[in-house]
Image (tube, rainbow, N blue to C red):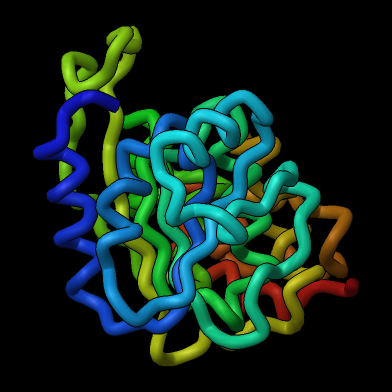
Length: 239
């Protein structure tokens, strides 16, 4: 990313929060890192898989010594033993997987600020009765409030990608969503959306007893259900 104004806007969004620990995912050539290193009195770490990029970062930003974790984020262990914020221009090809990994750490991650391909960012922030509303929308919004902050044009990058990008912010929900348990909730949501064109009754019939399936909510399709609807249904499964 070459546009420092975009980096500053992302940093500005970050600094609306108070925090002591910060993890950057995929620092790359340091477009955000150079600004993050200027934040005082925090424990900062960056996780990067590409050895060449790490060498570049250490050469240009010596302050990163002992702050870089040379690992695949998707295989990494939680980097702090107390709460921390996650930030990053996330690699688009694994951005959904990154979010699912963060969901595993949600009890320690109150805020996430990330750049995604625009259509993925919109999907994460999407509301019911929308074609972009799906598994990612429900599973993220079950635990975080999502705000779409702003677009990032291809011209902000060198070379420019063929897609628009978008910045979103996740803030942990103050009131926890009541669900049967995470395993059941995740399975219900994924099963419902895997056949999203079918009525819910047909898509999830294997998860419920026959008498429960008579409820009129099963006349709807997955995209018509709110997060709260899915949460309530999780208690009625036979799982």
